[in-house]
Picture (tube, rainbow, N blue to C red):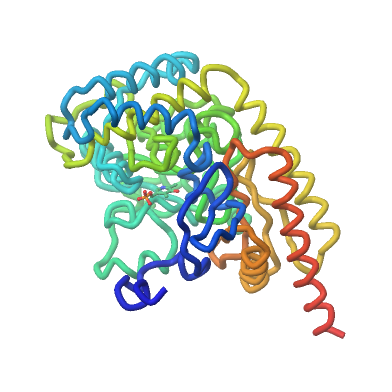
Length: 421
Ligand SMILES: *Cc1c(COP(=O)(O)O)cnc(C)c1O
């Protein structure tokens, strides 16, 4: 453990919460070097939707490596990239009647968001972008300006500009869209006409706040009426997390631009992309550049993941069943431990439970870890426990996870009741 304390920067976070050394992982399980196993309800913050080292993806990757497949290719044409684009068009875009060009960016989510913001500003020749309260879009300067969290923003060291903040659906009981509409229509509201709105349909880091279908449709309509581009940041909510491949599918909207990253490679390999309506593909070659836009190992596992999990409705049905189970478990927990919990948050396999405060949530996460489960908190006060298991989780593993949480809740509730009496 000393090597981390002496050598690794203080900027590390997850390792503070889970201070053990992991050495192997499979499916929903992480294993330490001492052989202790933890049920993984964090799943790489949504980067491991198909679990750790899925055998089908692993086999494709090993084959590719053994055949000396190109590993790094800048943005040169490779067989692996062609296979990915073909599978993505055939299994994801075409069945959903979506027409997008694919831009490969540097392999992190934040780089995809940077590209999306740059493109929206370029094609509209406007500077302002609307982002929402509690939104999270990454930590490089452009995307950080759109991120709400003050802890992250504080790290910038310079002023963050170019963003107008509007209340998200349900924020403090304010009708953010009514405000936005009024300001757009008032020539002296002081709102510079935006190039785009940038939003998550379910706010992952911001506390699993859900935008309703009607809110999304209203926002889309408002943007269309004013010639403002819509950018959906689907980096966390996409790739099946909310139940459909894209999180915006239930709303029926077709955003101008979509960002994907976290689980796009399916294997936890770095990869990110931007989907753009063909008419917005106004980039000139190399205008948004990057050395690692061609992580071919990620293309291989991404292709296999799409072909294996998205060729039929099996995974979607499984997600729906699991989501229903989680919903019921959360409602039962709320009833049993009203001293601890407020309300259920999120949708699909992007659900959580809001605790009375961040201290309770933190204590629960800590106890779960002691009992063999890795789980994280989200929200402005870290008061939401986030159930982020792999989408491929089995029913018995789900039951096991909620059993651990229940046992932790029992302990914390007893402690609180004892203190109060
Ligand atoms: C994680 C995340 C990002 C940033 O991705 P990184 O790979 O951490 O840069 C951006 N947007 C959303 C919605 C995210 O969840």
